[in-house]
Image 1 (spheres, one colour):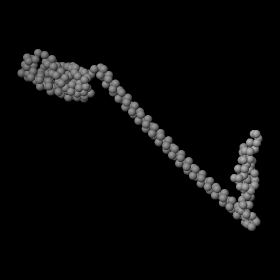
Image 2: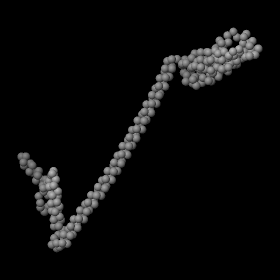
Image 3: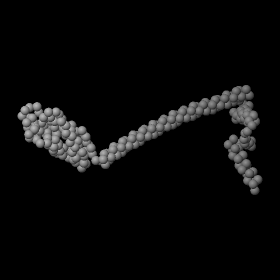
Image 4: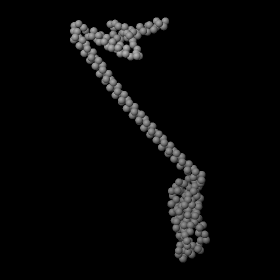
Amino acid sequence: MRVMMNRVRCETKTKDNVFVVVECSVQYQVIDEPLKIQEAFYKLTNPAKQIEAYVFDVIRATVPKINLDDVFIEKDHISQDIQETLAKTMLEFGYRIIATPITDIDPDRQVKKAMNTINKNQRLRDAAADEGEAAKIKAVKKAEAVAASIRIEAAADADSKHKAGEGLSRQRQAIIDGLTESVKLFQEGIGKEKVDSRTVMDLIMITQYFDMMKDVGERTKSNIVFTPGGKDNVGTQMRQAIMEGQGTAWATKN
């Protein structure tokens, strides 16, 4: 009258042609009624073998319809099918089926190794993809930072050159204004009829020339190009000086 348990191990094949061993623990008991007790004692000589046969029949009819991965997911449904089938059949022999849990699903050792390898490779691919994505994000952020730095430097350089241009423009305007004022004052002091504007400019140029020579003389290292004087403009004098210097160098060499 006690609750008994029969552990059944059944080897079968899944839908994707993988052999697997399914273990089911069947818990059963004789029904506590005089008629059922009599049926349990006289109708079955070996109830454990009878239960095992029905468990084999249900497992080998259910598992081949599903893939290996789904066997682990559908084990509760398989257990329920086994219990329903056994409950109807064993009731005629005076037995009550209490529970039929699936306790183990054991594929072939090589299959388990292959599944672990697949899982490992998948995780490695995911890790590589995450690493590549992280490197991509890092490279993009670095490029954005470099681009932003270049834009800031370019804007600063443009602003600096703009300010320098404005300063140079004001400097030249101040020089022009100063020269204009100097010519004006000189003509007012001497008299416009006695001196023209070119004479005044020549005098100012000579004054600036001597100021420049003074500044050059105060420096330890400096290069000076002397140009011959005359009525020609400064550009003509510069060209003439360069030509004379080249001619002197050629004569010395030959």
